[in-house]
Each structure stands twice: as C-alpha cells, then as structure tokens.
Image (tube, rainbow, N blue to C red; front, side):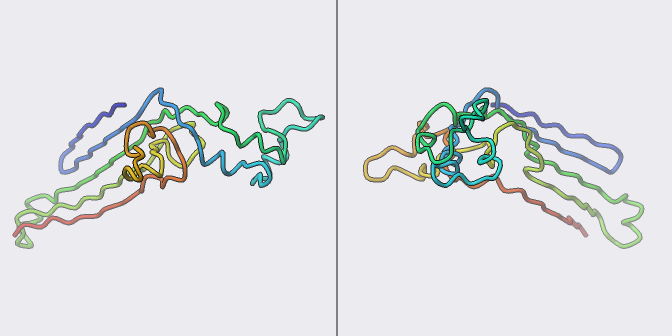
Length: 169
C-alpha cells in the first residue's frame, strides 16, 4: 500500500491532491459467489455464457450446477487499485478587493473525497473487509486481520463533496 500527496499554488489559487493505492493484494469475492449461485444465476450475460456441451470455451459453470458456488480460486481477483482519495481546490480573494468591502480575508474552497478509482476488481470497492469483522462474537476472532481481503456485502467507500467559505473581519 502507498500514497502520495502534493500541494500546488499559483497566485491566489491552491490545489491539493492525495492518491492512495495498493498493489498485489488478492480479494476473495464472496459477493460474486452468492450472486452466481447454482439455481439463481442472476445475469443474462452469465446465462448466455454458461458452460453447455456446445459452449465449452467458457469460464462460467453450467446453469443449475451448485458446484459453481463452492469455494474455489475462481472467485479470487486482483485487488490492486489507485484511488484519487482527496482533491481540494481553494481561492483567496485579493486583499485590494477585500479592503473595499471591509473584510480582512476571504477564502472559498471545494473538496472531494474518493472521486476516482482505477482497478480491475469486479466488486464494488477494492478496499474490502469482511462484513463480519465488527468484533469477536461467541469466541470467534472475526476482528483480526485474517478476514482482510474478503468481500462479502461490504459497503463501498463513500464519495463526498464539501464546500467552504472562510471569512475574517
């Protein structure tokens, strides 16, 4: 895992970028296991590409075969990604303009989180953790790092936007 951040300034403008990413991690896509369960193959594309005696050149098991729901490396995917985690743009109004309205400082800014994710992972978000990892219950250790890399119905990272006005008299 890694990240890089940089600040740029030009006259009264400033820009901050923060990129974060991960290389080489693998994710077991449990959500995909459930969605492609034997008797309820959920997509038209899956149904049309499933194995049949006349369609043997496919990686999709035959429809109605519960063996496709078994745990296998078929559901392990590359979890590498690069994400634009944070972007902030700001503008400070010039002091000569501010003097006319009796203000010492005025800054306008906008920031956004999780704007862009580049990945080949087919799930919602490559930053996964097993949904059961809320804490150890009944003696199990689901809060440990042994559940990292399992995607089973986790919520994707939230994309958010913020606007601000900083005013000093």
